[in-house]
Length: 245
Image 1 (tube, rainbow, N blue to C red):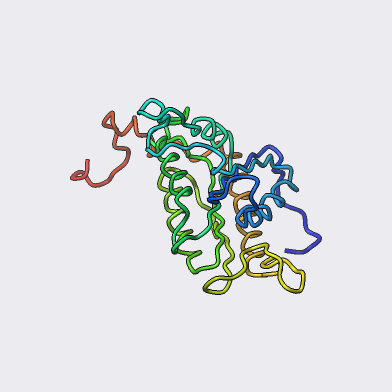
Image 2 (cartoon, rainbow, N blue to C red; image 1 turned 30 degrees about the vertical axis):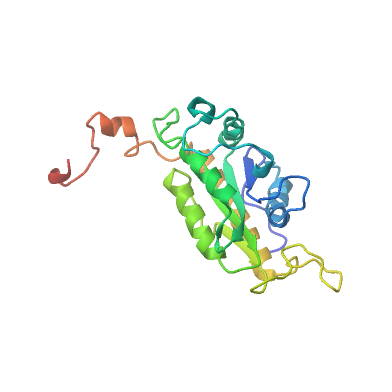
């Protein structure tokens, strides 16, 4: 890509939601938020409406129902967050690594997203069809690819479309040490000059943009062969194997 080239499309009609699964509530600094900010700035520069949600600032009840106040909990902030997720074309989940895994809050977000996985859009497809997803991971222990594998699998399983190279992350040396954005002895910010991380965040962001643009222009995923009501009604589409009908 030439530095003088222009993006192949316009993206100002797109919306993106970033959910930060740090364990730290505001206003504590979040290393994950700093790295997510790299992607957010790229999107904002293209006119995309970007929203950053720090999940630790909300009370998200455990469970896989859409509103857990209907299942014994006094408060559940998830329905409001879900409305913001559903208004977006792009969803990026950010998480730190703890003991080699995504944070407990990230797992909670995935569980609550899953609560809606049986709902359908106006074309009879599952409700997340036509949206794209990615993830950003930070920490000072191994596990970026392992965490991304689980997060991206979960998103595609409930209906999100995952573009190429839809994960990015930064980890420091094994063991205790600085995290992304911490100030080094020379005054620089740790990870800000890491070419591998900055490249991957950039590639991820543009691939999210390209695929979101393509899906929106196409009206989403074609509504054929993927409508649960048609299957339930006995229309098994074009399965060529009669024994599987």
